[in-house]
Length: 435
View 1 (tube, rainbow, N blue to C red):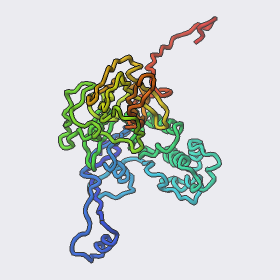
View 2 (view 1 turned 120 degrees about the horizontal axis):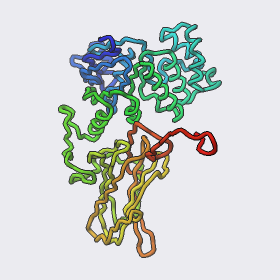
View 3 (view 1 turned 60 degrees about the horizontal axis):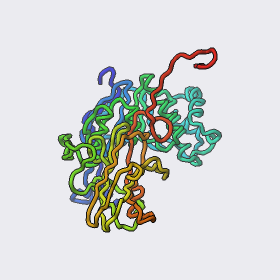
View 4 (view 1 turned 180 degrees about the horizontal axis):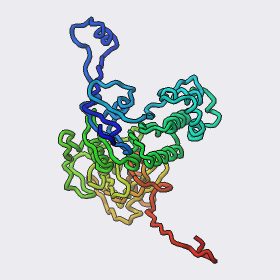
């Protein structure tokens, strides 16, 4: 390790032995079988990276990629199969809710328990206790058994302990998703303080907006293998391609076959195969027209539902007409997870003429716009409606069809960013124009 390197991971491997049934494990451990009853699962395969003092590093990857396993080995929760892990500095880790807590103890008793496990004396914990309780903000519950806590109170106390024992290295694994938005803001403000103090943060999260905003560098794992590391934007774009099978993980080359596409274009074949459709999609209508395919395209023209704030994106819908329909209205809506309509439009609002759609024909509708929504998760709905004389008719609607995740390194207040330009200048203290 160099003088500035605080975490060094070299050729790290973690192998689990999997058994079809518990009795096979017992028989093999006792030597009662001639042949192995287990098969090997490589959770980590020859992973290497280093982290320097003061860096904020994120680890991303699909479920089962080995992110949490790496953190647990670094913190000593898990043993490695082979390789080397070197750490220089006091670590404070927030890996799993409840780790290191005794459910029968009160919150304050657990603070002392955790502090003692980290090597602090009672006097040192006494000194830090007011700051811990203030940050956790759980009131009189601090004196109650932890088993009576809600998950939100639990994570408040756990995080408060983790960040107020003066760590040199803070390791966090998805724990912040439990707290409310105000607590998350408080935690990330603490992250900023840590960065300014030159402390090191190792951060695992599926919240790509937080990764983009708070990390200096990102490591991408896939099925236990480190694919690449680099700046957050490049790694997140690569991760998006892994998610939809558009990256050759051996050569790291784009294999989507769509590199020449511009916004609004899509390859022949079924688009929807590239997306996970909501199990609870609301599907209804009289079916004179039917939405048979859809796609979400990012600013590069690639399929993907992980989108970058501030960049253009498109939603496509293919509609087949089972009857002749005059002037159909094609619709597109974005909701938040609570079901609130955030924004949307249709061909009538946009004054787009759709004409007469004959029976047996199809139309492809493309909605292209700049993405000014705040970072977060949203749901897309599609529809085809119209009028039969003076009667409004729903031909086909797909509500909450597919989700999109917006990645942002700058959020403002509310649902969308107005991209406001702000000027500040000296004012006149006399009369109007007080600054």
